[in-house]
Picture 1 (cartoon, chains in turn yellow, orange):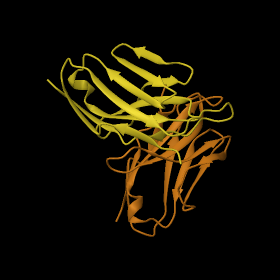
Picture 2: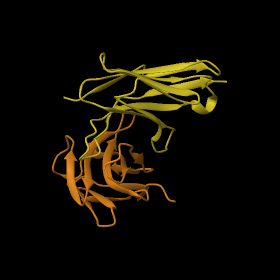
Picture 3: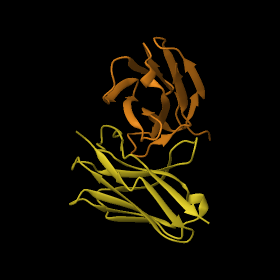
Length: 115
Length: 113
């Protein structure tokens, strides 16, 4: 069935360093890949997304890359700040013109940025 | 412009009882999806509503049912509650005409005792 594997489960970096979180998806038909940030006790917040016709997307300090052949996609955060500390979830979805695809989530990565 | 809202915030129920959770989508959104998030895990898709019909369903038993109203708001009903139903229930809405993006509400924390 559909599955998304996310690694690592925890990640600790020093403030200013970069952080990379990787995901692998099983359904080769997936075409939409969002990333969510969830702070403790709060809702998942969409921070960036990428569609299958694009290999890379950047938004200030965050970027996402997609390798469709390998079915891998990654989140890159540069110049990390303490406020980046949260749980990050990747997701994959098959978006058709007739519906909004269901999101299949990874298990999450707890990122800790040490001041 | 209000984002996605959910009610109630917290709920405590006893095994065997029934519960109804409510969601109002973001303005300009017409599709509502429901997810269950167990502690320490990623959200799991329950079902999705569009034009007042269930369009997609995840691997959840028939005890989980829903409804969408003409104003796009939605309800999630769970019958015969089990201890394992304790979780954060998240509602997500998507823009008109099957937009890709899904924006989440704050969730309802359900505890079954």
